[in-house]
Amino acid sequence: MKRRMEQLVNGRFEYEVPPLVVTEPEVTLTLDEGKNYRGELHAGAADGRRIKGFAVSDHPRIVLAQERFSGSACTIVYGIDTEGLGGGDEIRGTIVLSTGIEEKKIPVTVTIEHRQIRSTKGYIRTLDDFARLASKDFREAFSVFTRDSFDLMMQREDDSLRSLYQGMSRNPVTYQHLEEFLVTAGKKEQIRLSLNEAKKEFWNLEKSVKDTVYIYKNTWGYVRMEIEVEGDFLEVDKQTVTSENFIGSVYGLDFIIHKDRLANGRRFGRIIIRNVHQTLVFEVEASAAGARVRRKNPELMHHQAALMKEYLALQTHQMDYRTWYDSAWNHVRAMQEAGDNSTMLVFCQIFLYQRRKRSGDGTALGNAERQISPDNTPGAGAVSVLSEETESDRAGASVDPRAAGWILPPGTGEPDPASAADA
Image (cartoon, rainbow, N blue to C red; front, side, top):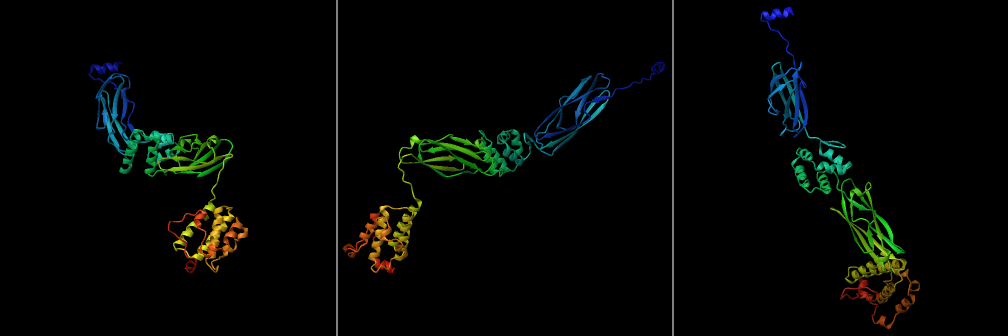
């Protein structure tokens, strides 16, 4: 104390100055592009005394809310302006705090990163990241697709993709818009649908029947299908189906055939499945118990059509007589083996026997004819009687194929047997 009093008497004034304490000696930030920042610095004397001072920044993007501050605990509010900056840019500057007890310089470093979109599957930085999210959770991907942050991410893409996004993101935005965006951007394959079968038959039904047609899709993504039915005896359980109804890559579409709507005979119906890119058709044929149904025989129809086609070729001189004759007998034999016992077949045989008679010496008799004799064919008696040489035969008459049910072009006549054989 004595020493202190001597200093005061002699005019020597010495006192201790408390240091300036700042909560953050430096500021280091990482910000997404387009995202501004607001921060605070807290300053005060170490001994809690009241201080006064002012703050300045040496960088135009480091903005201070006010220059002057005072008090025992001062708050300096500052902001970081990132407008116009892109990923990879940096801001480096200093905030200087000048007070009556001390001056402090606070270095500020800000790094700008490409905007990252958060999702339950991680950060979305690129379109590839986004496509992976869509493959796992299309609903969440749709939510990301409609955010403003996704628009900023698309600014880093090329002009064609930006234009595509602008077109697909206009309201109202649907799941189909997102699907088309991913397909056109080359991030996924277009969905193609297929059925497990194209047709099904239900014969002699004694009661209504429920069945299922299975629809398959080839890849992940969104699809919407509209279901239509042709045939009042058919009913489906859904008129609209989306990819959310699929279990994995399969959806089973249930349908009912109402027996009370079948009436007599055979009924035809179709289930039509339409989406933006495809139309699938599932055909149904059905009949009720006791109904008279005449079923088609594809093999018989093939040989009947071939007989007609080859006869017309003979008439127009596109086929020689011997080739036609042997081929015709081959078709007749095949029709017999297929179970045809119709009158039409009998008339075909008669017609062929008559053609042989008219050829004179029987040289047109081929190997195929020798395998079918009038004794083992349906209507053998009629064939034997009508194939005997009669006065009509000698006069050149023959059985017109029109009598067997053939429809021949107007004006076509039978070629002269002798000239046809020579041809």
